[in-house]
Image 1 (spheres, rainbow, N blue to C red):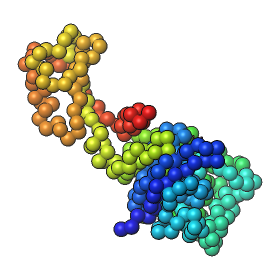
Image 2 (image 1 turned 30 degrees about the horizontal axis):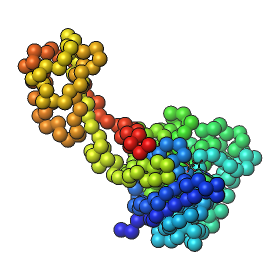
Image 3 (image 1 turned 180 degrees about the vertical axis):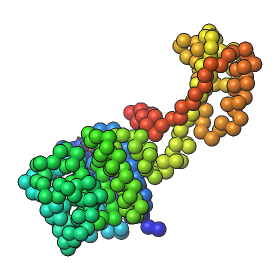
Length: 308
Ligand SMILES: Nc1ncnc2c1ncn2[C@@H]1O[C@H](COP(=O)(O)OP(=O)(O)OP(=O)(O)O)[C@@H](O)[C@H]1O
């Protein structure tokens, strides 16, 4: 199947000479959830702005459903909903009118029943006749999402949707993303809450200083770069690791009570049992054992560190 979004050799140099994107190429498949990760200033918003036709690229091309985002702006923009980081709209307008108006801007005929449903889905229905200035920060965030969904887009961009929102709203947002995924909407999100991306994304892209470092299936990435740690707490401290355990790459904790063993995911077949037996044979008494798995955040931090 042809990708829904295709990005080829995309570059962006701002008028002040700053290169925000450098030769970025990748495809986005219909129906997937892609998490774009990167530190502040990496170029994520610039990339999203170009795909949404709000910023012109300096080089390269982006197509949405086969249409060029610059030449066929109206066609491509109609397929996209964008949830920006901030609400910039008339604060005296009501919630319902704001969202309805957004639908009209994308050239769709009015559909009050659909707008009502969107407001209900986002727990905004009770506030439909309130002016935006009367809403809390969290509710304004919900209005941003309602606006982005007002014209039934096939693609939804969420730029930092959960930054600065409370736990309940974050949960609601991820549930909404999950519901939209089930209806076949393609979702691209940026977030600094990497553990949330780990939970919801099908694929992960990492951008740093305008360059795409990788884009990969989340599970493949976790398998390739993920590691596990086994921590064995001893009842009595030791000064050195016994020679009989030299075959295992063990690290001894500072207090001499903890042996840490790192291994690759998927390679644990029988190895842990052998190690525990070897520890016992070496005369060490085990008080506690625990494991820890590398998170997407650990992988992200090491990727960004390597690229620095
Ligand atoms: N209009 C502009 N003119 C000049 N430089 C810009 C402009 N817009 C963005 N930049 C610069 O381009 C770089 C990328 O910015 P961008 O907003 O795309 O990053 P980001 O990855 O979205 O960051 P964040 O996570 O902080 O939102 C930054 O260094 C930023 O200062």
